[in-house]
Length: 447
Image 1 (spheres, rainbow, N blue to C red):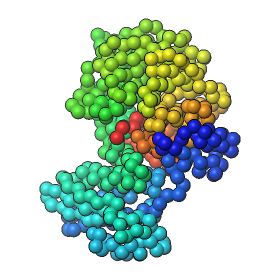
Image 2 (cartoon, rainbow, N blue to C red):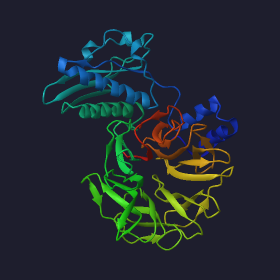
Image 3 (cartoon, rainbow, N blue to C red):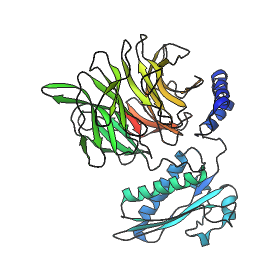
Image 4 (cartoon, helix red, strand yellow):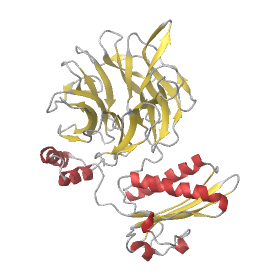
């Protein structure tokens, strides 16, 4: 994706989309531009063979997780197992390519293997073969060994799926091993920081502040999460920047500043944090080191500035939201606070939650147009051309990009309550991740 949307090509892709109203042809152009080619190879995943009765449950789990991961990848077509031949290989010597190439499977690739299990260890042998070039070496061949638990088997399945995606997408890894941080009120009403696997499994609570936490943001090395917290001190409770260490499982000390301090964002190199603060009056953007030292003011306009997003590719540009013109709108500036520019949209309304794509060219954000609800849009920052991803499906906010640039996570009320959803970056394959309580403010981890 990082190399496909360049210069004039991005201009023509998005102009076509803007004037053709998301026609099928225009949709294909855009999906190709973000690395989601409509011509997907077909990859079958045979049932992994259990070498003993004790291994059956985990063999089935491993198979299903790999299938789900590859289906959600957006770059592969996974035929239904009902189309598969009755005999599945468990080792390469048993592979019969012709029966997988023939209809109705019509496979280009086949993943298969076996699983052994004892009371102390699970061992998984996993292969991927190009069945249309059977004389070639295995595309992927791995052996996974670890604790015989559901959590570990899921982890191995995610790793195998990511290895397949990497091989079939020119080296760009998949996101099956990534995580999503989010805010949930399911544990007694307080809003705490939670984390889950990218597919919604393994949801677990991180913080126990018994207060309100908002806007979690992963550090570039995934070792910390910065977030907005309402922390009491000396009898007063105010919005402050909090920091949680995944390494220690505890909060990391971060200074309290006067006023309201919210919406932190990391620099791409992980050495600085931008946040909004009213320490000197109106909420403005400040930058500090990751320990809160030497805060420096970046914006000085009338009105509030907040929700910064640092360009992850260049490190030189920050997108943010300001109501200096009357309503919340989208702005760009250099990372030192110079050259502020308003990104004009073709209609009025409110713009919130900007998020840079990993390629540093596309911006996702939530926009409430007049007489409409909040929906997710993508803008090419250079050409200002727009693509609308959601419509007439509740309120959709807080987009965050996956590190592969092919997926987005966001919060939505389309099911009646506020929940976390993912979708491909062209708006297709929406998938609900949370169901319990109210859940919001998702942020996708780096690799």
